[in-house]
Length: 205
Image (tube, rainbow, N blue to C red; front, top):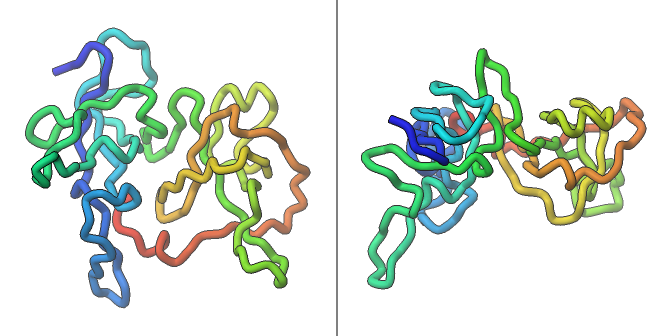
């Protein structure tokens, strides 16, 4: 079963990741279907597109756009599936809606996507815990590597590119290569930021 231009994927777990574990107890933190932050973004590839060349293979685990598994309210207030719903628990995904894929227990970026780890702001006089528009490159891609920007480098990125994902219980920002604007000297004393809610999240996402 294959589509011509889209992947066919299956969510891993439930469609919404709205539960966390606190002191060995399961806590529901959101019950709304409209909040994109709690939509599952982890899936398994069931079929690859026939008309597109891709490094992603059937069976790979992928991180996808938050709207794929999302449900909506129609004009009558009824909860309905989105346009990416195929049948049963299968969905379509464009190549541009897949950001990471996992094979042999290793994450690799798709197309020009990359992921940045936020850094903690050590200035005690600032209320914001995060350094603004600065982070450590967690997952790189070939276009950045050509520029000698590799995983572990401290990078600066464009404002308002902090699209949050939780990968392996780590908070990361997903962005594209052209969102990375500068490579900083690595001082070695940077403090990675990871909130407690990311550490307690269920599953991969």
